[in-house]
Image (cartoon, rainbow, N blue to C red):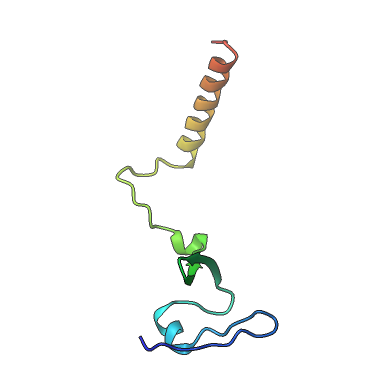
Length: 87
C-alpha cells in the first residue's frame, strides 16, 4: 500500500484515506480501538455482535431452548443446594 498523509483537524478528527478504506473495512458508524505500540499509533476495527455471529463452531448440536432452560434450572438448584448445604 502507498503511504498516505492525513491532517488532524482542530476537533482532533482525521479522515481515513480511500486507499486505507479499500483494504481496511470501515464505514460511517464503524468503531475503532486506538492503541500506541512502540512509536506507532494503531487503529483496530471493533467488531459488533452481528459480525461475530457464527465464528464459534460447536461439534454438539443445540438441544433446543426448553432443554437449555431445564439444564440451567438444574444447575441453579444444584448450586443452591451445595452452597446452602441442602439436598
